[in-house]
Length: 58
Image (cartoon, rainbow, N blue to C red; front, side):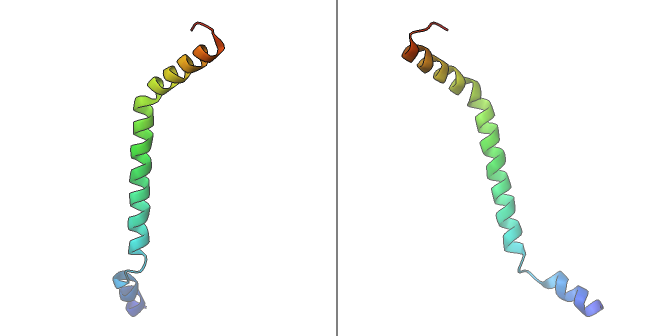
């Protein structure tokens, strides 16, 4: 049992997948923060485009 615990402790096969998961999580957080920061600006721009295409005032 102790030998199996030592082998699991030293095994590094899953380490790469954990690192990839952490990188993906970090990228997702950055994307969410960026979209939150510029979200209102993007919405306003699309509203202006729609108003221009339909001839309506905002």
